[in-house]
Every structure is written in C-alpha cells, then in structure tokens.
Image (cartoon, rainbow, N blue to C red; front, side, top):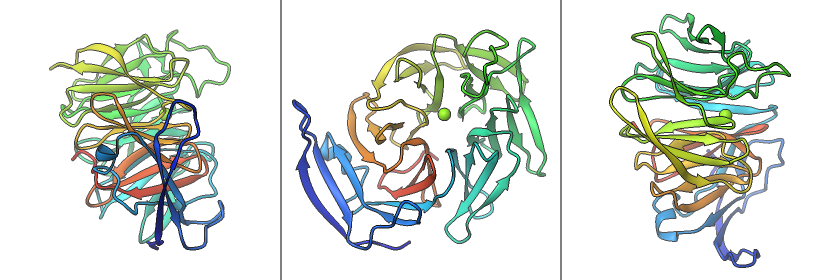
Amino acid sequence: MRQPRSMFKSVRCARPGVLPLLLLAASASAQPSPATNGPVATAFEIRDAALFRKIVPPGAHLERLATGMRFTEGPVWVPRQGGFLVFSEIPSDELKRWTRAEGLSTFRKPSRNANGNTVDRQGRLISCEHTGRRVSRLESDGTLRTLVDRFEGKRFNSPNDVAVHPDGSIWFTDPDYGLRNEPSEYGGRFVFRFDPTRGALSVVATNFDRPNGICFSPDGRRLYIADSGKPRHIRVFEVKKGGEVSGGEVFCRIDPGVPDGIRCDAKGRVYSSAGDGVHLFGPDGRLIGKILVPETPANLCFGEADGRTLFITARTSLYAIRLLARGPR
Ligand code: MG
C-alpha cells in the first residue's frame, strides 16, 4: 500500500448550531482521479474526539482499492486460503474477489444479482440473491446450494443482507428492492431467521418499511436492523436463547442518506453506511464521528488477518481504511 504523507487541520462546520470538529487528512501525494486506485484525501467529522481516537488512528486515510464498477455491495472477509474479500457488483451480476497480492478478479458470475454476503462459523460464504430470490451457501466442495427461498410456500421478494448469529442461525432481511414492478408474493417485507440444522424458517419482524442491513453485537445478545425506507434509522432488539427477540426501539437515526449495510466491531460499536460516508456509533447509540467517503457507501465489513481493515463498498469503487478497532472474531 502506498502511504501518503498526511496533513491534519481542524476546521469548524458551517452549519448553524452544530460545531463538530472536522479533521482533514489530506494526501500530500498527487490526488488520484476517480478513475484510479490509490490513497484518497480523507476527511472525518468528529463528535467525540476521545472515543473517535480509539477507533481511527492519526494519519488514517482511505485507499481506493478498485474502481470502474457500477454498484458495489455486500463485502465480506472470507478467512480461507490466506483470506480474501468477496463483494457484490450487483448490476454486473457478479461476485468479485480481492486480495492485496492479486487485486481484483471474478469470484462468481452469474451471481443471480447477489447483494449481501456473510460467512458462517465454518467459513462458508452465504449470499442473498436478488434474482435468485433465495439465500444460498457455497459448500466447501464448491457446490452452490439453496438454503431457503420460500416463506409459507411463497417466494421471497429479494433477500438483501444477512448475518449469522453465534448459535449458527442465519438472519436476513427481505425488502423489495429487487422486485421489478411485481408484488410481493407473501405480501410483506419481513426479516427472517433460518435455522440450517433444522431447516426451520421463522419471522423476526414484520414492521419495517425497507429492512436492509443486519448485524449482531459480538456476544449475539443484540440484533441491529437498518430501515432504509421512510424511517432511515437503525433499531435494536434483544435476542433470547432459541432466537426469540424483544425490544426493537430506535437505536440511532441516519442523516444524510439512509442506513444500508451495518456492522459491529469487537467492542460492540455500530458502523453504518450513510449518504456522506460511514457513521460510527457507541453501543449507547450516540454518534462518535464519521468517516467521509467520496462516493456514497452501501455496505462495509472488517477484514484482513488482524481484522483492523474496514472495507467499504461505495457505488463504483471499493475503499479501505486501517483502524485501531477490529471486527468481531
Ligand atoms: Mg443492503
């Protein structure tokens, strides 16, 4: 990775009544055009400097790892074969693979317009497929298997994002973004839990407008679900043994833009994609700060061997930033 020299300066936000410290880390090297890879001049909006500095080290900067795509989504670090990143390039009907050594390549095409991806406790890739209208799993022998594609005999809308609970159950959201002027077969936009050992599907929530990003706290006791429809907020649920949930109050609101992909780090802080970048929240729901990104992020994940790289899929590009925080193990 090319390391740019960083310059820091603090400026005040011009919005009346709001004076967050804005820290600009500008690359002293030539700024790459949007069509090239490399270090990117990076700005942060800091609301709590002490907490922010536990996440983002001085000199941290975004790096554009790949670009020239159309709509990137669903990054996940796959801890096999030395580790590699998989993410979705939805309009190209393709799953991409990235490593520092080998750069960008095709992982699977067609992908049936896969969107959100995760890995289970065995390291198997689990994908939400828009046009496949299913949640699939890539088995260790290379075969692609449908895990679940129907609720009470009716097809899903377009599974969007997915997370695996520490108990092995697979939780996913099913908004209708992938339906083209078709009605929902089951007449809703639900959040589901699938138990792969029993083959049992259950409904987690029915009262979201557009349920989207989904993640668990590291201990699996909290479930976060983003609503990228009208509410533009993230709600938090308590998860009981056996997979029942309670609560569901608003955890935080996202502005500007909407929350799409969300992830927890190892300390239980919540990272959400937003209109201007990635917003960082404490477990209490307070905004710690923002990593501003040149393109609007749709999703993010932690990865690499130490779990301290935050990968961000944002429209045409894949970005990364090295953090002090790490992803859950
Ligand atoms: Mg999504």
